[in-house]
Length: 113
Image 1 (spheres, rainbow, N blue to C red):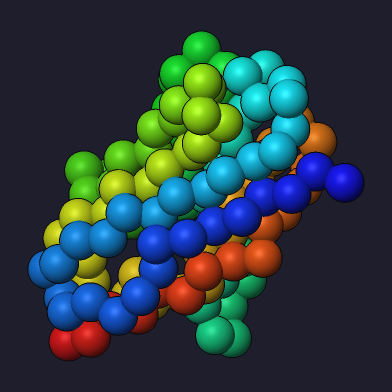
Image 2 (image 1 turned 30 degrees about the horizontal axis):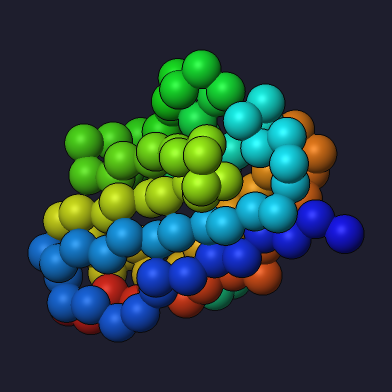
């Protein structure tokens, strides 16, 4: 059973930064597209950022210029650097292996105003 484990969430003031990490046990990690999603209370889960096997990225319009997704294939890690956080970024953030459709358990991010 392949596991995705997120970490790095927490409580931060508006304007602050957090870095989320996602570790995977999948040996073929370098061949997989990876994504970060989020789900706020009462809302649908939405794509935040995605990174391809070649390092190409795409972002939700709401986070462009503030968030950066990256990956370290040697460590089997994917990261989400979140800067200039806003209260509307408050959500549970999930890591997803886009190639196999696997999800992590999520990590809570709360941004206070």
